[in-house]
Image 1 (cartoon, rainbow, N blue to C red):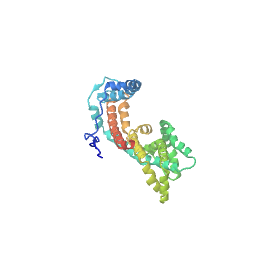
Image 2: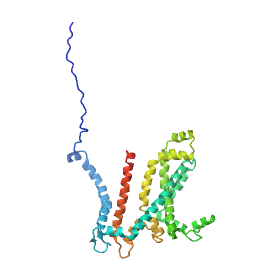
Image 3: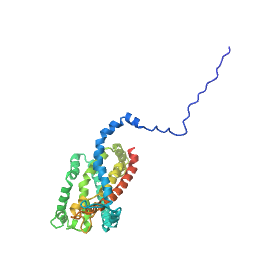
Image 4: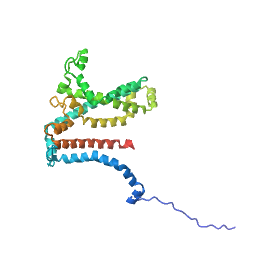
Length: 322
């Protein structure tokens, strides 16, 4: 018996193209309309207009004013880059930048680890944790001007001042506090840390809730003490939050104005003059009308530095958001 066999039909699997992914088709205005782009634009248009009027228009106006010699009274005169040259040649600019950096450094040394230490200690408390959290956040609720005026009363340099009286109980003082150039900036940092630390404490407490308890249990099995658990478990688990708060604090301290303005007015002997204080002096230092061109020029220079810091922040934190 003969079996007829038909020739085998071989099929070849399609090979992947070596030219890479196919380019996406370009969207046309008709595609945009069909996908509801027009209705989306109509809904977002009021928000775009409000944002443009109250945000982008002032920025554009500042760009124009930085190229003008104007006090908002007389007719403005275009002077090109003379305002930037004036600011860069101002001998007070170096002093203001140095004071701002000094404030930022002191705020990082004292104000950055303190909220973390307070949050770690409060996370170990089993009872009345809510009360301690409320007390830590209470300074944030106090209006900033009220807080500064209250601390200014505490900083009375006389022997009967509040802080000098407390220091006298242990045989110290009296201290000049705000009246001395060497102690004025640390005094400002102390108040600023007290006023802002509560919000950071709450952020750290929320982040500590996400730390897995089995990591602490494993560390205890290995014989780790409290400090080793904090160093090897807590800090590595909070590295993302720690870095974000670090960048935000650097950006925030570079814009310090309220404390030196209300405490010392930039004194004594320009020891607390900051960049924003210098901008204020340019704009409002004269009763006849300030140099708003120089003020906006320095503002744009500060904004450029902060933009670079923000770009570095977004670049470094991009892997964490994916």
